[in-house]
Image (cartoon, rainbow, N blue to C red; front, side, top):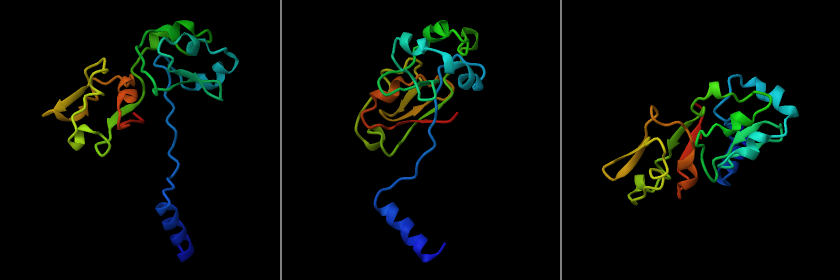
Length: 163
């Protein structure tokens, strides 16, 4: 690395420019073959998104369904799989959502001595446990990655990663 590259890197870091992170695409929890989204969803009218009770399924520019937990989470109600005419989503393939949910301790109010239970209350699986009134943690064995905790966190401390 020459001096120009070094100063350019330091300058961009100081200006707050962040590296672009790889987008994690969350799919509805009823698929068997990930490649079927790219082939079968292209001629579909997106009934899975229309019938989603929680309105968390969005159809992307590539015409494939993706989950967006900005306002709600998945109840695993089966409606998207029932509505899927190309049979990409099938009831028999029901599974947990393929994601790892974690708590960013630096952002979390509870980890920083402010009592908050916003993530625990909406957790349908009781996967969020608190140690001594503060310090929430997510049990990976119990978490289905439904996403309800994400939109409820006032500190934006719940993060989604690849499972």
